[in-house]
Image (cartoon, rainbow, N blue to C red):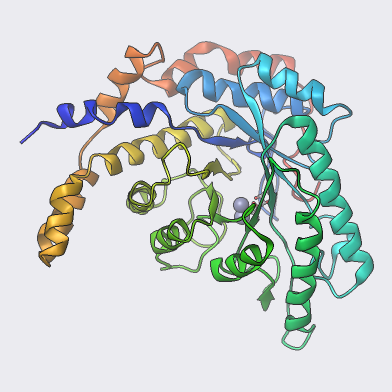
Length: 392
Ligand code: AOS
Ligand code: ZN
Ligand code: ZN
């Protein structure tokens, strides 16, 4: 029987390879439909958002890239933004499109019945692909607000066909090095039907496109009680899990700190990621956060999230796989469950702290950030921060 510390020593190589992408919009002000609260020191432009994201990476070694959202992160020269990111020790990552804020998209975008709205949305994605060439990004992430509020409002079948055609047009424009990831969400802003409501629809749409099209799984986009880890397993099994949008929820699409509402669910998801090879270098799975920090400080909010992902990854890696496999094959119900729970209940925090310090990182990234003086500096320097985007 090996000790937890001995077992931990066997997983550090895999932990060292972990990379979690941060969303630029997490650093801007955000809120609910009731109120957007301002936060002192909020970035005023994409350059400052990237500088803040780089703080998360500097303190954790876990977040080497930043996802952009177009047009919230629109700049004149993306080459300059890319160089700025590199100077700060991070890369530009996924490009998120936006077809939900313009008047023209009132009745939908890529799935809309109106050909003018569809063409506008396709053209926007062409612009995003141009941005990807300049930023060196691999992934174009598409989340659609398309849907209807009332039965009979529009023809669901026609909209699905429109969507397939629009996506094929965008797919044809991708560079060889690019991928398209299609995110699903079961409701909101549409309340009767959504054009990409579930992983099956996303899978059907991307499977029709080709190898460079994958599914994006946002952990907050499922009905309560959904077994998300089953979906993770299935998409990995099918070779179509392109990316995660990690966040946490109690009710709907709450976009809270990852693992805050249900750390055990995050553990179960990471168990299936490990089981399905999603952590392997060649898996291609992008681990992104999709969060908004409404009342809490944003940089520590992101630090807490990436640490939570790291912690649950470590626990998932600690599972005694051989013993679990033997127990499962023997139909040892409680034995198998006990092996999983032993890993979940292993407190890896002291081991992670020690390991971080051994790599020249702060043992306690939250405390190190708080002591760094960065927050006071940005509060003094920045006045009039921008909003993350909703309603902007
Ligand atoms: C929306 O609910 C989705 O989660 C998208 O990923 C969206 O583009 C992102 O939250 C940025 O606002
Ligand atoms: Zn998302
Ligand atoms: Zn969402």
